[in-house]
Structure formats: structure tokens, C-alpha cells
Image (cartoon, rainbow over all chains, first blue to last red; front, side):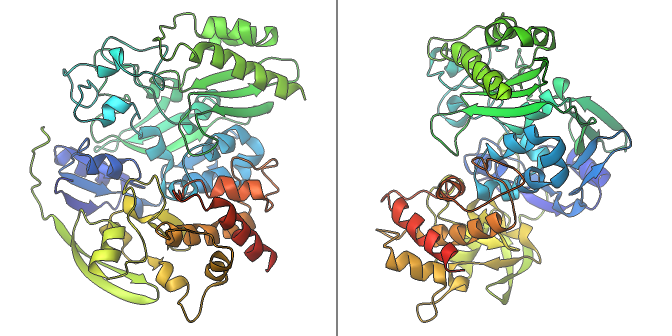
Length: 316
Length: 178
């Protein structure tokens, strides 16, 4: 790990200002992903801004009947929150599908959104990776791609967003709230928060330098059967090969977002008109532009069949 | 911005926290993890370093009543925290019921992962009692003890000797004894 200076921020604006003032500074909250990457020198901040003292750790109702989730609410607490369990069970289910009990006790809502990919070539510092070292190339394109993206990738990167929480939040139409060093706020729909890699795979999200996430808001509850189904290589504590976050109403209409398939939670709203017609019809629209590799082509039938399972479960 | 940028400020700092009931004052390089502070600076070598990346759980300790991976946490971020390690859970002369059950059920072979397993096992029972749901919880509003719940909740603690079934027996007995 490289040496770094450290400060404890006292307000979100001060945290943002500190991050802007020091080139190569990072916020740290739970630290469960950042410290892992710092030990490998994949991340090498010269300054850490500890944001754990800022509060932002409550889940509160909003004026329009939704919820505001503080950026520092821990994954365990969000999954166990009574309002979330009752009105947004999709979010609880996605959270407990991820990581381990120890990690969920530390990991925060904002940090979960900002976690980096687990592409094996991003982690292997002996290999080229445009996300880790822009311009060095992408070893994944001709490498082992079992875990990697089947849609939305580019010639520069086929990494996936590894999380579960963001997939549920995408289906729930969540909005990310931020503040910058000048105190200006911004509300970013989850659909726009994570980027596709394009020719700048080093940028995972649309956040600007120093822009600080203060909360994630959920609109009023939409009801329906809410099911998160994660398919992975072992029964627990593994990243998704494919995950499905679905909200299904009694008349068969609904919403669905897919995890493990792209650089961001993958949802195609126009395809949701096909929900009453079954998984094959939905998947055909959602994955119309898929470009799988030989190692991960299985994800396309797997995604369709996982959705079929979820649709069948919703009818029970 | 390159990986070789040098920090402009101090790269060490002071921190005070409580370990197993005793207040500890340290000045540490910012890079020192809680695990390394416990083992190398305080001399509590019960917490183990396995993978050092949060994947194996050998470093599990309790912080303010919750289990965490001490390898993925910086010591300087624990100002004012109350930390309990395996040394604070029980001693050879006064074993915690979970330690006693692990011994009687042979819930280990080499023993390296055991301190983390015991910290996690105690936390798992508490998390179930608090109604915190898991991936295998059928009804998010009714969390109850079961073998499946223990297996799922212990998945962040690896045992390469494979003593899992005996650990489950130990945990089940402690739960039943309450």
C-alpha cells in the first residue's frame, strides 16, 4: 500500500472540498472495497477523506411517500430496515444476496454504488486493463470472460458492475443525490448513474471529482411481487453470473433489471411491455444488442431462464 | 496524477480506542489496518491474518457489538470504538460457551480460522435474535434459527480443514442452551 495523508470530514461540503483540494484524494466510508484495492495498489490515493463522522446514516420518509436512504446507512441496516422490508423487499433481498455478514456490517449505501468491477484482469496488475491503466489495452477481450459483460461493452472494456443493490435500485427507479464543494446539489437517476465503458472505462459513474453522494431516494412504493434471484458459482458469498430484480403485478405487468451482464444494472424499459408474454419475449428485447464472448454466451439463456423462474415464482 | 504521487501531509496519526475493556492510545502509520494494530502493536495475536482481503474471515472481530473484517479497516478510523477480540470473549480458565462448544464438538482441525469462526458464530446468533434477515430467510419479518441460516450467515468464514459440520453442531448447541 502507498502512504497517504488522512482527515476526518465534518460536513458533506467540506468532504467534497477536501477531495477537490488534494489531487488523487478518495473518500473512505466502509473501506471494504477501497482498502482491498489499495493493498493491491490498484487504487493509490495520496489522501483519504474519512466521511464516517457525517451522520447520513438514517432511512427516512420523503414528502412524496418514498424513502431517503442516507449515504452511510450500512448494508445490514438497510436490508433490515422495517420500511424497506415492508415496502421495498426487492432491495432487502438484493442486499442480503451480496457479500458476507462482516462486509455488510461495514459497507455503505454510497460505497456499494461506487464499488469497482471484479473483472480478473482489473485485479491482475500484470495484465493490461483500460479501466485500471487507461490506454494499456483490455486483456479480457481475448481472455477468460466467464464473469464479464454480454451487453453494453466496448472494444476497450467488457467489465461488469459487480453489485446487487444497484440492480434492485435500478428496478425501483432510485435517484442518487449528491453535493459538490460549492454546495451545489444534483439528483441523478439510477439509470444514468453508472456509465457504459465506451472509450473511457476508467470512469465507472457520471460523478465529477469531489462530488459526494449524500443519499439515495426511492419513489413511493409500487407494490407487486418483488423477487431478486441471483445465480452464482457457489451458494453464498460470490458475485452474480446473472441476477434478476423483478417487480411483478397480478396482471403480469412489471419491471425487470438484470445484474452481472453489463457495466451497469441492465434495464430496458421498452421491453417491459412484453412482461405478460413471458421471459423469452422480454429477454429477446432486453438482450437484442448482446455481444457475448465464447466464455460467457451462456449468460443469455441463463438470464432468460432465470427470469422465467422468477415469473413462475411470482404466480405461486 | 500517477500512482507515484506523494502525499503532502502527515502519513501517520494518533488514535484511541478500547480493546477488550482496556483503553489503547497509539500513533500509527495511516496504512496500519485494525488487524495489524491488534496483532503487531497491541500484541493480541488471537485474531488471524488469512487472506488479508476480506475473503476468509480469519480476522473477524467485534466493533461496537458488530462483527467486521479487521483486515479491511484502518486502525485510525476506529477513534472511540469498542473492540472485542477472541481474547476478550473468553480465556482458557473461563471459556465462553461458544468456545466450550467448539472444543467439545471438535469444530476445528488446525485452529487457524477458529478465532474468526467463534467471533462470527456469536455474532450470527445475535443477528438472528435481532431479526436481521439473510439470503435464506423465507419471511423477511420472521427470522428464526435454522441450520440453513447458520450456514448462510457463516459463509464469510472459510475453514480449509473443512470442520464446518462440527462448527454447526457447536453453534446449534449454544443456541439450544440459551
